[in-house]
Image (cartoon, rainbow, N blue to C red; front, side, top):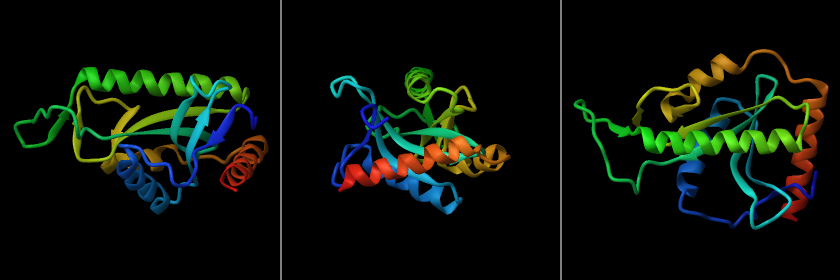
Length: 168
């Protein structure tokens, strides 16, 4: 597993880092265990960065954080920034590829994914796999049912150990 999953160093900052921090803080406030900055794949040139791994409702969730800042704004009649179909579809394709890649690395593990926009936006058309920070509590309440299997809990512990080893 260590050759296929690694974690970014603590000082690693990218353009989306402030948005990632905001979503991570909200997940922790909601009581969701998280790991930030995982990278998956055997080839470092082709690896996929995962903003967060979260343990929620017995499944391992990939949380991909997006910010609509830097994109030309579109506004609704009531003054809410809109996320259009092209941006949404790109984000949804990305999360699907991430879920497929992590599922291949961790066969038998229940993996789900969601795109979370870090600011108040309206996602059009509305989707369950692309939400805003404001609707994150609804997702947590809806999905936080059941308990993780012993295998998933063991995996979560091994991911924590791997993260600690990567940060040393």
